Length: 271
Image 1 (cartoon, rainbow, N blue to C red):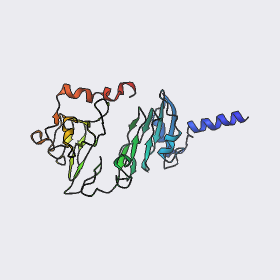
Image 2 (spheres, one colour):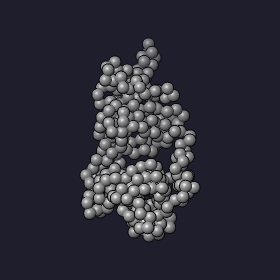
Image 3 (cartoon, one colour):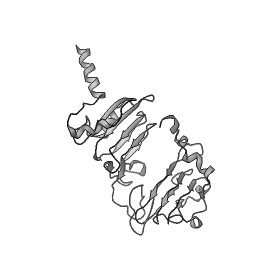
Image 4 (cartoon, one colour):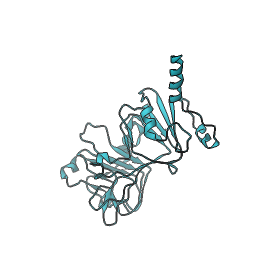
């Protein structure tokens, strides 16, 4: 009898309770075939969890099979951390305008830029669909870091990326394809936070908020020889090749191909 009760309890954890309410029927449109575990997160009472972090913690994090986390409409005000032992997670929202994770840390409030995240991803083969990740901290004071999606104050200049690639051997970097850059005040595309920082923007619309010099070496002039900053077929009033810093590259199709292909993130193995 105790074994039977344990099995019933265990199955109820990995297979969230199906809610009969019409408001919960929205979850049924998402296919679950191919997933070893399915979790539902809802602020409306349609899932076992009300916090996304609790669903992540409950996952097995298999390197072989995928776990699906279905997230209901709403603003989830929490700081989400996917550790290294939680792999193959698929986070599915109800639309990027209607499902969001929001937190308001800054570099000063969290004791450093690396801890100021709203969502931190360390697990391999993570996928997010139809959900927004937002940092809702106030606009920074002059001289403070500007992180992606935040808005710089007038008469200041922010930065979209600060890549942490330390050595030439690191297979890391940030790549943005088919994006739009809008907002207020001025921003750089990237700053040389680490000596081998690597960032590529491809086929991206750049509004006038993008500073015409494009990139910043943070006064580490030696990094100009080691960083890799590229633009490929970008357009808009923020694109002015003649005024870009000399270490920013205008990439040809063949030069951009290794970055714009999903093989850059080994996506052919897990996407």
